[in-house]
Amino acid sequence: MKKVLVLGSGAREVAIARSVSQSSIKNAIFCISKDINPQINDLCEDYLVCDVNDVASIVSYAKEKEIDLVIVGPENPLASGVVNALEKTGVGCVGPKKEVAMIETSKAFARMIIDLCCPEKNPQRKEFVSIAGVKNFMETLGGEYVVKFDGLMGGKGVRISGEHLKNLNEGLDYANEIIKDGGRFLVEEKLVGEEFSLMSFVDGKTCKHMPIVQDHKRAFEGDVGPNTGGMGTYSYGNHSLPFLKKEDVLEAQKTNELVAKQLLKHTGSPYVGVLYGGFMLTKDGIKVIEYNARFGDPEAMNVLSILKSDFLSVCISMVEGRLDKESVLFDKLATVCKYVVPVGYPNNPAKGFEVFCDQDDPSLFLASVMLKDKKLIACGSRTAAVVGKNKDIWKAEAFAEKGVSNISGKLFHRKDIGTEDLIGFRVKRMKGLLG
Image (spheres, rainbow, N blue to C red):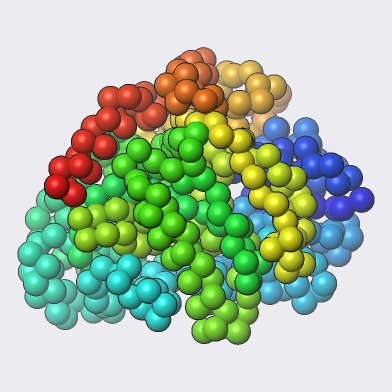
């Protein structure tokens, strides 16, 4: 019997808990999060309501319940050093130690690691702690730049010229906001192309790669509006995307492998967990946008929904450093994931309203919700996701669209994710860029 503790209570953690529960290895699931997610609760032996960044309470609970394995969902506990503390007590973790998780928690650290192993994947950039030189560098980049807060902001710390920042003064205002709060930031050249995500299982030495997924960060249809944690995702049955060539996929995989090796070389700590590379295909080749140190959300729902291999077995292999012996296979199915979110999300979301849906639907993944007086109440962040999967991506999209349309409350979603029109537009735009 393996006692598995899942940290976090979003849709990503529902996908993780479900995948563990389907293992052929006998297991008992435990969870710690600030709110009880009813779908996770239904799979759990025990559930502790607690701040997921409270390292001492997590370690104490793991000892009390004699936990064998911890799977860390969100990034903040990694930054808090929860893996370091748990490993000291002999508990294996799917998630990197604090010093290696800096690949996500510090944008400057990530760029430095990439410089050491594949510098051609980095854009031009400079790091700043004051406003001195910022305007000059923005102008050097021809006014085409990105301002990135050097830390964790739930995917909302990046602002792009011409999109979020209408002119140079708005860019300088955002830089000054960060400085006022005592932060540091990067100004990078604005990359133009198509984004894609590649996640890899890593045991410190070996990488086993997952299907490539494309996320949609912008809140509204047509890729407009503020950045969000991700409004939805899609993947193709061939585990690539229609604007990528085979060599592009291999190059992204190689980059993840080089970064994992460089992290070990630089920190002395093996990277154990899911390494998430955010890439962009540009006219100058593949560039790295960012790295995350855990499963993406929504991307986790896409890939875990079609994982053929035993997920718990893969997790144990990562922790025991024998991932090279593990077969990691995925069904040749396309997937489309769509989120419903509260009206006003992300800047001023409605909360406290009742959500109506079929909680027993296996394609539904509840996220920022809680049960109150037997009612499902929205907590203000992304509310729920639905995943469609099919050999035909348009059928997968139609399934996901029907599913999210059946969820009611003060909610909205992006109808265009995974549609023929939007994907066709992106393929056409990429062809134009590549000439």
